Every structure is written in C-alpha cells, then in structure tokens.
Image 1 (cartoon, rainbow, N blue to C red):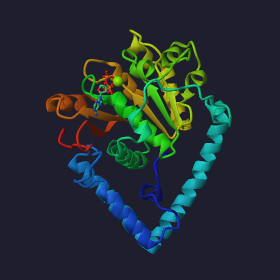
Image 2: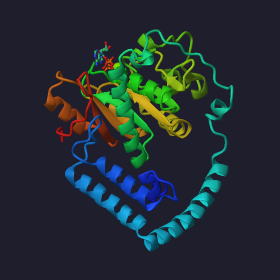
Image 3: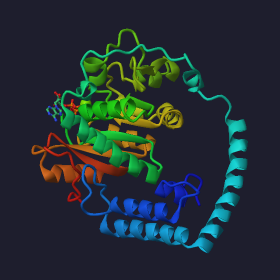
Image 4: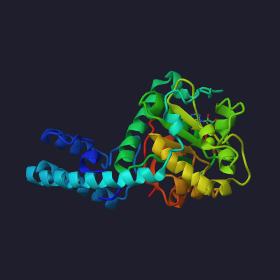
Length: 331
Ligand SMILES: Nc1ncnc2c1ncn2[C@@H]1O[C@H](COP(=O)(O)OP(=O)(O)OP(=O)(O)O)[C@@H](O)[C@H]1O
Ligand SMILES: [Mg+2]
C-alpha cells in the first residue's frame, strides 16, 4: 500500500469491526458510484477505468467477506500501521512548527470578514437550489474520499459560466451544513470577483500580497463571521498572474492548506484564454468544471476538458440547468 493510499475499510467507509451485512451494504453502495446512472456529479471515468474500479471493489469485497482472508488482511494492516507510525514520528520531528498552528488554537481566529452580497444558499430561500449543492457535495465527498483528494479547483471553458457562484454556494453548504472546515482561495488574479463583489475587504491582505512576499499566509486567511468558512481572497488584480501562481510560495501554501483544512476550493479563471490554469494545476488534486447549461458549445467544453493539465477532472457541474448533473459524454 502506498503512503497515502486508503485501506479497504476506509475506501468502503466501514469500521474495522464491520459485520458481514455492513460489508455487503458498503460494497453495493460503493459500486453505484461507478454506475452509468449516477446523477449530480459524474466522474469522467472511461469505461476501462470504471471496469478497473469495479473489479478492485469486488476484490475488496471478496477479501473482507471471507473470514480467513479478512484475518490475513487485518494482520497486514496492523503491520502496515506500525510502520506508518514510525515514519510519522520521524517526519513530525523534522518538519517543526506548522505555519497554520496559530489558527487552530482556540480564539486565535478573528471573524474579520463580512459579505457585501449574500450567497444564495445562505438563507435557504430557494430550497431546490440548496438541495442541488447538497447533492453535489455528497458526490464530491465520495470521490474525494476514494481518491484522497482535498483540494480542488473550480474552472470553466470560458468566462462567466458560474465558477464563482458555484464555488461560494458549494463552500458555504459544506461549511454550514456539513460542518467541514473549508478554505476558499481566489486564484483568479485577473478578475478577482470574490474580493471586489462579495467580501468587505477593508484593509485585509490577500493572496497577491502573500505571493509577492508582502504578507504571510496567517494574516491573509480570514474566517467569514459566524461560519466555519475561511477565505484567502486575491484582494486585487495583477498583470503577472501566471508568474505569481507558478511560484514555490503558491505550492507551499497549498500543501500546508491541505493539511489544515478539510477541503480547499480554488476559484479559478477560465481555461481557454489563459495559461494560469496550468500553473494552478500543479498545486491542486483535481478540477471541477462548470458548464453553463445551454450556452457553451459542446466542442468548446470538450476541448477545455481535454486541455486540463496534470491534475484530473473530478466532474462537471451543469450550472443553470433544472437538474444539476454530470455529463460523461464529453470524453
Ligand atoms: N445558475 C445561475 N442562474 C442565474 N444567474 C447565474 C447563475 N450562475 C451564475 N449566474 C450569474 O452569471 C454571472 C457570472 O457568474 P460567475 O461570476 O459565477 O461566473 P464565473 O464563471 O466566475 O465568471 P468569470 O469567468 O468572470 O470569473 C453572475 O452575474 C452570476 O450571478
Ligand atoms: Mg469568477
């Protein structure tokens, strides 16, 4: 098993003492993730990849449902755990103080941020709209857990498809209803709508200041008052955005943020006219592609999805459709 790989119990989301019935139920549930009729978010697995996932699941199931195989697997996990523990002890001594440590101490955070403009899901005035984001999060969480993803970037083929709206509503639902500690990073340094339209920034620092070395990350991340939702806004637009996003500071920041937050969501510029997205892809686990329903031509979406570099595509969100759902036909 690789360092960050999950074991069978973690993948199936069951306890080490799960009963045979629980194992069977978890196996059936996991299988549905790769089925054709999954709605809300559809991962763009090819049919070969889907076959592969299904056969891995079957392997897990047959191991855990056979008592002697399960005992052998449990013994293997125990040995593995002891090895990991040793590795962890060595690493934690070596790495020293966590740059986010201060934030996790009770009372260290200040609720400095307030909103200029409400996020739609906040007052639940449109229950169907909120429900779509709940479904979206449930699907995303399953995929993130299975792939050990924590940070994902929200992008789209072209401008104005709803990336920022999707980022904010999703992040708010995750923090407010699912009690996740969520960090939203605004990486659209050319058109920073979160800083200009949504947050009362006052004199707060932003990502631009951190990447230029004018502020440290601790002073630039702030919590939205009365929530578990944190923001690292851009603050202002810059011309040399690719240069800043391609810096070691950006990658370092993302690595540390992954450790301190349950999820990190990066609001991005669109894919096609910019190089920024390939810089961002170096510091995230996967992309979520927003498609404005009925407006963006399919071949443009297809081209954009194919051009996504390095990090994989987690799914496609159809924004503005009656039912937000994933569409696999782009590949
Ligand atoms: N489902 C929707 N229904 C109605 N209006 C929407 C919807 N989604 C987004 N909008 C509106 O469309 C505009 C663009 O949305 P948003 O800013 O989220 O897009 P974006 O992809 O982040 O744009 P940009 O590429 O400029 O960053 C905004 O005015 C937003 O309020
Ligand atoms: Mg935007």
